[in-house]
Amino acid sequence: MVEFKAMKSMVALPHDSGSLQLLHMLSNIEGLQRPIRRAEKKILNDAHKQIKHKLEGAPSKVRVQTPAEKAFVLLQCSIGQIYLDETTLHQEMNNIAEYAV
Image (cartoon, rainbow, N blue to C red; front, side, top):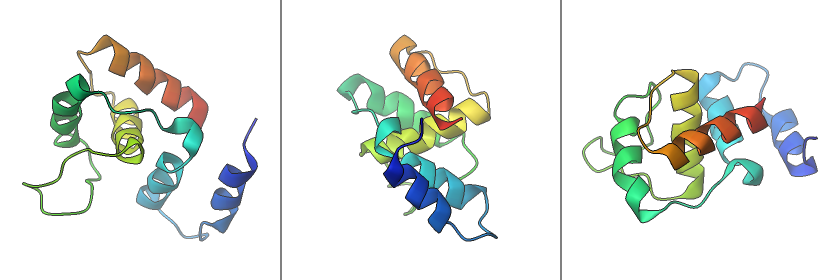
């Protein structure tokens, strides 16, 4: 079931919004956000280099630091079928993708 806040943000999207706006909207849904563990930071930053849509900022200084950014990266890893070595991250990626559908 879709939460009311999530539905409001979906309805608020412009009709001509693209995949980037949709990914940002999905990653800001609280149900998709998971806390970032210290051991995951390097793996998430490496995965960020492989995804299509990058986080805003200078490419050399961008780091995944918030749960919303983690969801943004994991959603794209799931869509792009990027393999993650970390078992916990792989499970979270699958859970986020299922929740987003």
